[in-house]
Image (cartoon, rainbow, N blue to C red; front, side, top):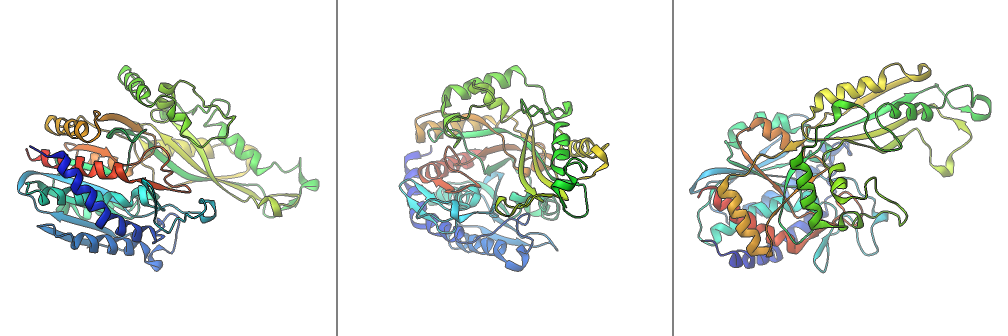
Amino acid sequence: MLDYESLLKWSDKQWENSILPSLCEFISIEALSPGFEPRWEEKGELSATLDLFQNWADIQGIEGLESHRFKLDGRTPLLIIKVKGSLPGEILFYSHLDKQPSKPDLWSDGLSPFVGKRRGEWLYGRGSIDDGYGGYLCISAIKALQAHGMDHPSATFLIETCEESGSYDLPAYLDHCTPYLGNPDLVVVMDSGGPDYDHIWKTDALRGLIHGTLRVRVSNEGVHSGMAGGAIPSSFRIARILLDRIEDSRTGKILIPSFHTEINDSQIKTAGAIAEVVGESLWESLPVVETLVPHNTDTAQMLLDVNWRPALSVIGAGGLPPIESAGNVLRTHTDLALSLRIPPGVDSQKAVIELTEALEKDPPFGAEVKFEAYPPADGFRAPPLPPNVAEELEKASSSLTGKPSHTTWVGGTIPFMAMMQSKYPDSAFLCTGAAGPGNNAHGPDEKLHIPTAKRLTAAIAAVSWSVGN
């Protein structure tokens, strides 16, 4: 029998004395993902995060621990840590240490993306919740079992540094490192969370992603808008016409039928169950202006909108000068960075081909139009957990939180999930994490809710033990 209270007390000490100090060191490393920093290899910060984490893991005194570093030519570095178990079964834990860009001037007074700072129950800093804490938590879950004299199955920890760029280096490593990855019975991913901090949430669905740049060019040099406006079609207007091919701007509905999947009764029922737990907090937790209203005011439909329906966002632009220096010039071009979320079940490779054709075919007014896509990512839908694992997750959740665990969905993308499901179709998946309302991953004042991370460490220890029992 597991002593959940003892595991939680141990976790509290581990976080206070070991994890939080090292996590603050991690926060101090900018470690931009390669999609945001072309000089990543020269700067060496991605390797520095692996150095930090590997050194921390090596001094934990975990019996049977071995570390393996990999660096394929031209690809971001990767770390695999293995811990030999004494129970049957294998677990593969995944997390990443690369980060999104930060704008320090947008952070609140006294806070910085590169200084780990604790305020009450929160640790602030870029990478604190996405996903610096994940590897620390999972290693500590196995250490907790050893500290309590308990057996555990073999554990493998895969730490990558390309996730925020779509994990485009990961497939090569999954092939190269196959002998080190074993044949996991359970894959645990610590890059998710849920809509509150009162439950332990397991993510059963993630959307896929098509990410690329739409480029529209109409001239070779800027022309006075008074001389050419009305003669040369505006590149921005042409971009608007092209976006109208794929999205209804009034409703936000994506107009390409193959980008949708059928929403069945089970999904509608689950949306209703999640809505009963979160209530109005789903919308209220978003930092919107006071007058803004959502597409759907019904919470269950809102959950379906952000998890099971495709959605387009324009996340960046080129060719547009700052307002302060904008002259009366008809610009040569407009570039728009597009992020298109697609629901689980849509083939991202086919979707990016169809999207490219929709944007490039028959360009309005004969403009030069090009869509340059990054490698796309499929969505993910989890199979049911094995009965022994599901039962232990419920016991741990009830003991540690006083509430049952709860299923949720996440509208974001973890490319690793679909990659691993393709490589290991018979494995079970537990996608969870400490993320929740207000953590603001990728944004200013990113923060980790420390009590949730401590509880989750104890829960993952219990789940890990159950795999071999």
